Image 1: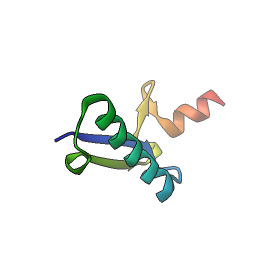
Image 2: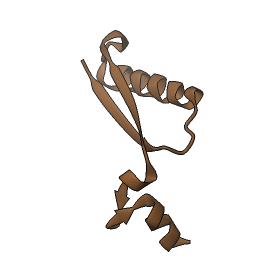
Image 3: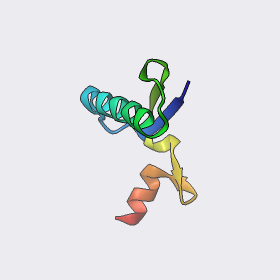
Image 4: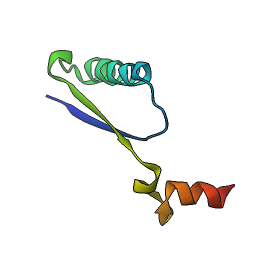
Length: 67
């Protein structure tokens, strides 16, 4: 019973994109590991830029510094 948790920054990921991610991950687990899609769980969490850290700062600050 695989459980996959995908975390992305909250920047307008559409329902269609989420559906594609869920299907793609489910198909990959079936193809590579022989896992049953009926018992494969995929959860997508959207995280605010200020709640995601990289390089010792949140993504919003990091991007400003990189610009």
